[in-house]
Image (cartoon, rainbow, N blue to C red; front, side):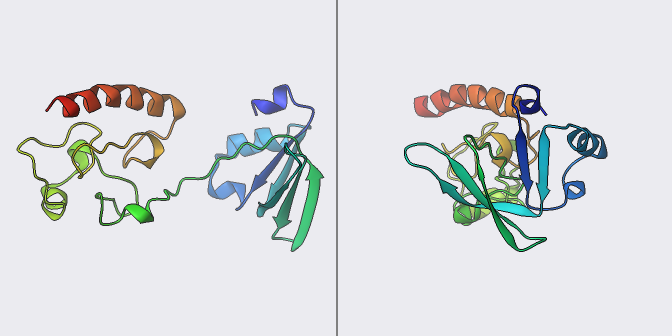
Length: 165
């Protein structure tokens, strides 16, 4: 919606139906905005250009067609599923794959991780001492950029604390 105020045209590609991930109010605003072109059940398959982005190709799953259009900029929202499988066995994850930190770590989590310190994990500290997680990847996070930035700034102080230990 923000880009639609200044751009001539905004093309939105959504991998699923909007109703699965978005409020009805926002869906209505998108549908009612004349310079927004919406493509549901579509995903980017190729980026084209020489030195800069010139075109984007996407696959429309409804029609099984590939569509290529001139596009100069791509902004991505990668979704609400964390890409943390590679951390399994390294730090404690919740049932949905988000990283557990601080007070969300149970005694069982800490025992499984062989938590070696006398102190409890700090606010954004994972089950691996000195490793922190903030933002969307963190279990029970607010899932907003402003919150992630704030968490990151707090985390810097915690990192200094750990380094001083």
